[in-house]
Image (tube, rainbow, N blue to C red; front, side):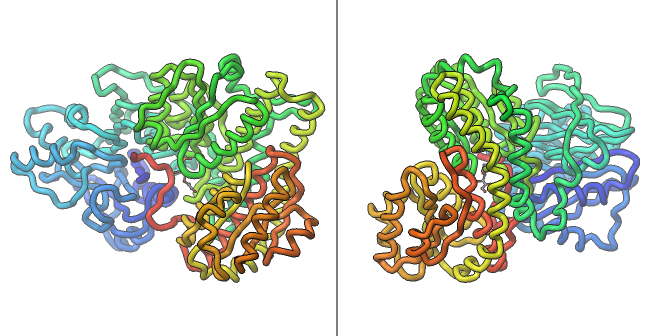
Length: 612
Ligand code: F6R
């Protein structure tokens, strides 16, 4: 949430920062701003709207300078407008700040600064922090770095900040607590980003700033210390982002590109891990914790949104194959009750971004209770990846569309691999079945490739229901999370109200909603619950409901009952169930496009929810 970019070096900072902000726009896009030092003075430009609106508004103005910071915002304190946009300049003009996160005690700090004569131009917590730094700086002769450090000691909450000091325009000061910041290292130049995407074309050498660390960055070098003054030796890592991953590559939207990337992203997630020639699954990241996993009394899966849906698929897979009881928890709820966790529990955190604040807090709680904590993350080096005891990366590649698509199928692929690996190691799965399950896993990319060929047919269905106000998604067993995910995709990008339900629950309430206008999307492939789901479809039809059924190729029974069908290749067991989400992703995408919605940047949302 909120994207931050900074640059110091020999190049013109403006294009680097503007292009960087465009790449980070998935993190927030209600306003944007930039501060530049042109060798004599510092200019701050801010604009309500997208980065392109900012760009238009500064056309013709002075954008010179080799040092600057930029921000694209997802509002927390204060409505989205020009004055609440970042960067924020302190009252006496000494400090300019960009901030991602929430300063929880900002009201208190604001009151105290007010009694000392400070007035505020915006409603943000971030401006208060800029003023606090300035207030401390002006009290006694100290360096701007020390002022930032002292101010941060007074702050409660989460922050990723980059600060410019107008008295010392030879440096940038960056600090983080619970909001990510990455420093890119070039030749006498440094880049800062909320992730590495803003600067991948300039350098692949990065330092991930850790919690409670402050970096002072000048053209001559990078110095990092802890908030308590301990010197930190920067650990330089190589970041591996392919430039093509952050471009649309001929697709009209990132979301569509990412839907189409799924055969590749699932293949990449399984590469080197599923060895079909020898019927073996090896997840290198879990080798050391295998004994704990095999002896786990219980697995608790935590996540939010789509990652939580993947967790529900995981529950089904672990219970079916590994025979370990599973609980799936919303990270945001888990952390605020008093959950009973002990040392025999394994907690698995699922997160695309690896930065979701609630998920991060949930794993910190689980660690405190002595559980073994594992991560399934997409972003390498992310906070969750670093905080967990062990884990598995989903190699889905950079996901930019705010609605998660390829990350979901990659997460479920990892969960399927884990469940099968543990199940086999515990002798719950017979050799012949294991062979068959591995075949099923390996066939997923090809099956998705096949489903993607139905895009035009799905588009025709979308055209018919694009003006609906409501939609119901139904599924049974491992298809229930698919129904939830289908409903989430539709509501978040098309703003149509949609609900996912276990099909059999329909008669306990939602059946009252059925009429001849609301589409009911049923995942009804030939599987364990097939006969039952046929009954559920009949119940909908008996009430003149409209049924769009996702069915197994060649199923004439449901085809004769449903108003529309979308055929998918046969899935023989839970391992391949995730393929049924793909037509639902496409359906949501086309409906949203036809309604004129911005699918990559839906209203009010942002990717990487780093606030609670
Ligand atoms: C839905 C979506 C969100 C995220 C959720 C968790 O399409 O993108 O619901 O799934 O915010 O994010 P991560 O997986 O990054 O923890």
